[in-house]
Image 1 (tube, helix red, strand yellow):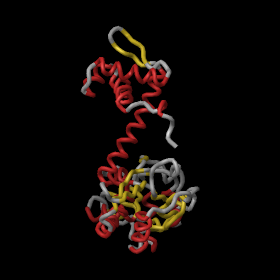
Image 2 (cartoon, helix red, strand yellow):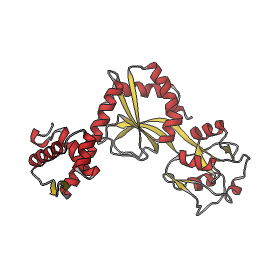
Image 3 (cartoon, rainbow, N blue to C red):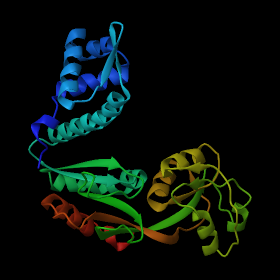
Image 4 (cartoon, helix red, strand yellow):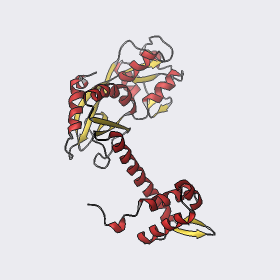
Length: 294
């Protein structure tokens, strides 16, 4: 149920508040909004009267927001951004069905997008929108139909469909196979969301390794770029390593990929009905062999 009208200010007054807070003056806000200074002042005054809280004070010929006004403007900015995104999505999709996915950036780029190309060709009536998320989130509070998750089946409130297992390989800018023990003498690059990844890889090659230190990254693509620039050795998943090897920017330092703990999953909220568009995507990913391993 939508809140009573008295709690729903006009868009124009919210735009005025947000612009004044962001730009610092009503004059600058008026210029950005193509309004007069007095028009912005009236919008602010009307908003203040509707809310019933002092949102601004006059300083000479200008306006200054109170703390309540600044806090409200911050909340309003998020609302306006959400409204703009919703409008953009419906405009981009037109009459087609929309499917909103939260994806891991490197996996989305190198594994999912090639499969979405075929899906889009077979399903022209469906528009797939992608947004990056690096960690699990509350699936009922964000407007996603599904998400890509790495790890185990440890995300509460979702159903799972397996996509692919994880396989890793060390890669660097200079070609040449290197024994696992010899890697310990090289600078090793680490991923923030995969603590212990190198230790696990060395353990699977019967090579003791402790207290490994090196540069830390929050995305695989940044780590691969650093490796390509000669800053160290990156431990990369197959989908990204193959792309980098094909470009010739990186080279494998081992002769095979090593399976490690964790897999990629398509997940969706248990408490929401599965949309026809999501059902079509699930079937397409299953038919493409996504759940078969690689």
